[in-house]
Structure formats: structure tokens, C-alpha cells
Length: 99
Image (tube, rainbow, N blue to C red; front, side):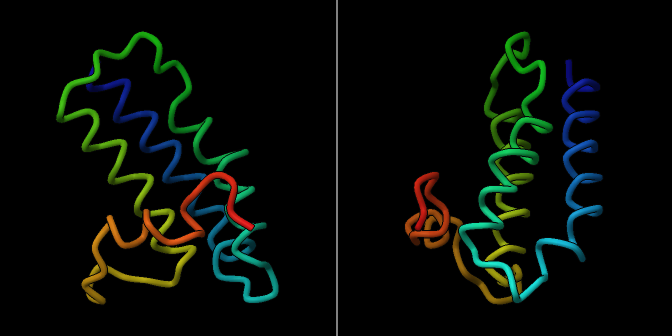
């Protein structure tokens, strides 16, 4: 089970690498467009086959870390900026219906 989750997180990381220069860091794209890519490509890649996963605190933590890594990059925030995940979640860009 953990091996499959590791593969899914790795696949999502590979997607992030491919999109990093073409989408994530492009200043010409709005955060709304970047989040559309997040919901259309990154999340499905990360959660493909999740129906069979046993959701433990550890697996939830792995998935959340992968998601927050993408969202931090879209927001232009690094861990060194000491912005909490809850701050990013509260901001308007982190919601699915962001405008």
C-alpha cells in the first residue's frame, strides 16, 4: 500500500516538475489558471486509484504535503517564509472555486 502511494506521489511530483517552468512560475498566468491546472492534472494524478487506499494519519500527511508543495509554489511561498499551511488554505487561491 505504501509503495503504491509513494508511486502516486512520485508521479504527481513528476507532473509538477514538467509544469514548473511552463505553468507554475509563469507570471503571465493568473493564480486561477494555475489552480485550474492543479485541479485538472495534479490532483487526479496524485489520487488515481485512491479508492483502495487505507487512509491513515501517515497517508493523509503524505498527500497533504504533496498538495501543499504545489500550492506553495503557485503562491510563490517557500517553507523559509514561515507561512503556515492554514494561512495558505484560508487564502482565496487555495479554494476550488477561486476567482
